[in-house]
Image (cartoon, rainbow, N blue to C red; front, side):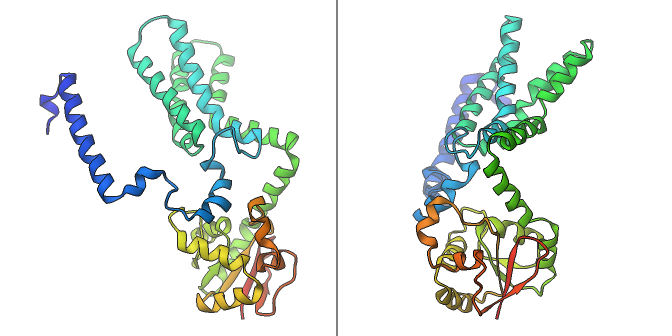
Length: 303
């Protein structure tokens, strides 16, 4: 409504401030948790044992499992910023659109360093300088154009990171391969073919089951699902007989987990004598009936 009358920047600024103030007041009154950080709704236990171990919720450099992980997430982001700054330096001219873009990209890069999940959105923006350079290099040599394309493709940085991890962080890479084997086709197909029911599974596995099978799950990678995620931790970390009572109370049909699930160091003191420890060591309680999955997923029917 105000657009046609707001061409002078002071008027636009005043309108923006007024609308922004109304929006901020609405958020403060209706959803104050949004002002306390994205994970403030989590219980302290879930913050400690789950979210603190999620790569995308961490700093780009501090807390990542491998250097390759930082390269995979941040390579294109830093490459786009570097190419933008190089363009400004090379042309030595005041190009306001590019100056504005550089400021925006710099601020976004800082946000990406502070929390990895920002890099997902930023990757598309960071590829713009490479696209422009490619368009301007139509008459340049083929090698230069190929180099720009390779450096501006996100898959390049993922491939570099994968090679780094295979060379320098083999134990972690082995654990990742084992985790992927648990959610490959055959175990998911077997799970999905079972009569529809409710599956108790750890957070990491639950995200696959809820998306690829007709079953209901309690826990998955959604940080506002406090009740369901806590139920999964209480179930797997309980002694077998207490877990059996929980399964009856919650009407659990199946239990599923991967050999590598819930092995974070922060859970070490809770694992002793738990159902989780029993199942991952092959000692299955009598109230659970094993179901072959054709893969590494451990799947059971509650008797």
